[in-house]
Length: 92
Image (cartoon, rainbow, N blue to C red):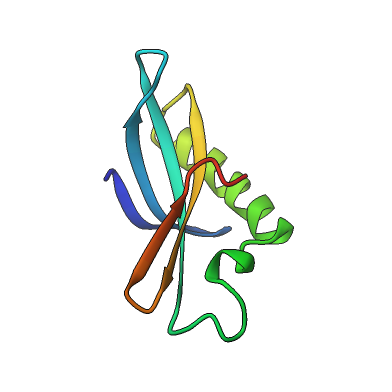
């Protein structure tokens, strides 16, 4: 993990981490975490719609500029329902 709950005037990124890339470098992973007690009103990952995705892309660009990072990036969604965790790599 590199950063947790990173904030700017545009919003917040839940988690930023490195993942070994298949190309030999490091991939910067921006992860949105959604939690629900149950899936009664739908799965948590469904809450990451187009508007949220757009906001996360803007935030990722800001994070990369502030930290002077370049290269491969990925957007994941971690969906937590009760005690079950499912991670959607490259969700968007």
